[in-house]
Image (cartoon, rainbow, N blue to C red; front, top):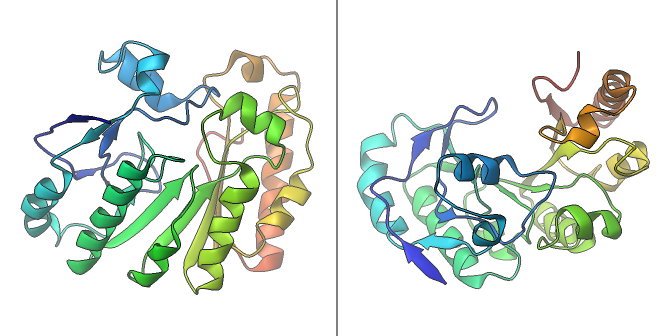
Length: 252
């Protein structure tokens, strides 16, 4: 594992459903090919040169030291901290990042700061021992492993990912799903109601369309497809008493 240092870590995010965030790694071994907006952003600004470099993440070695400095200064402004928006806090099989993420969540919780977690890896069951205010989520846009292998090649298998989330739910934790970027039928034909049924135990679902993909943008009936998907998600969530958030730009 290669290490880098940073001058700051916690910052206010512009993501519509976020507050503060931290990204304590550069790159992501999951190597998502939707494409990944974070990779496109980091490549555009020269922080990584290639997809291959992106898939070899570098860990921010002074993460905990930065938190010790920044938490006292920012804690009265922070409602929650999300791990993460431009990397993954629980990269599948990358134990150094998993361990550091757990330590960071503990440190934030000890200061009375709620954490929201999102991963395409596996959520450690140790998270159940931390603050009951925390929220734990996985990204899940399909149940088909052949699709996962094509578009999320380094991420955890869907069944394992879902099982780790259900274990935290059964331990009494607040759980959620990011169903984004949801693929159009020219990428994969699938049954959205069946996918929703598989996650019917969660407290919240965030749904959003696929962006930055020419196959999707050229799909005939794109507008009607996502409008129908959103109607299905809303009806499902309302029938199960699940909170939901539809990402801006998903419907027209």
